[in-house]
Length: 371
Image 1 (tube, rainbow, N blue to C red):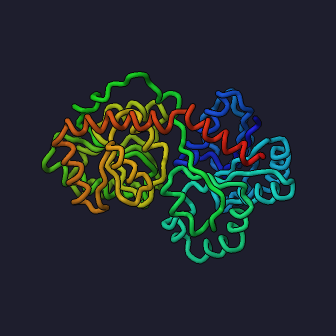
Image 2 (cartoon, rainbow, N blue to C red):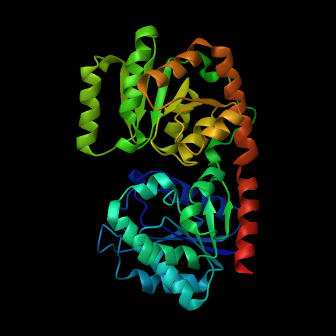
Image 3 (cartoon, rainbow, N blue to C red):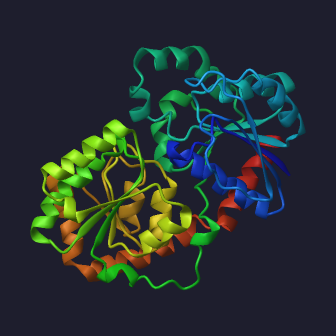
């Protein structure tokens, strides 16, 4: 099968959608599919390169919309050759361009909104987003052969903006280097590290993680907080000032943006992942953390929260520093419970996110769309 993935850019600092597209593409290429990723050259960074995946980039001539005057010409040829086009994200010119071309060429395309159609996301952006949704995005959604969500919660929360469009749920496959046979779930039990991984942006609430850690450190001074990720200079400076004002500089470690292998080692050596985001879909960070037997404490806004509790591989705390600190402290004080959660975490990932499982689900949806 020839599969075309389309996304606005491959800027790794953009977060989850970039990592996810490579997880899908690598899984498919390893199964023998002919896989192409079409994108713009906006902030084209040192993205992962694989011999069996073709990446085509076109010049980005308008940064805000990721507009490229060359996109339609290049995309037309690729869409004509593809059996199925899988476009990721909603609000960019690349998605609009796919919609127009697929409609003209009568070719199927699947749209993965990446959480951009849920109620929290739709509240952001003000009038401009509402107008764009009404004038453009609504037509794109209507024309898509199917919508691809990565969680049942995302699918349900987006329903009001998708008008009962045909959709399916399929998770993000675990990366190859995270797959291990018979891993030891007790590895992190004696760790004294709490971990935050993600873009340093206000919607990820790293400031809440820092404030709650201040409270935790008063009763558990042996623990440190490791922050992995980057963000704007202004917001990063704010976070560092906050750490200074709370007098915990010696307990907070900044490690920046790490590669996949470095993150894997960090998950394995940490006691817990703290993820207090205002919004969190089934992102790579959460799946990778669980795959390395690192339980998660997150906030109720995450689509993942219900599954996390149901499968007993983490805990949910209200988005308030005392509540978050209390939930983390409970697990620090109960290492046996943490060990049980760590073992459950790995089992949950093996059941839902192994490449063979995800591939079978996605191929079935592709065949349905093509037919």
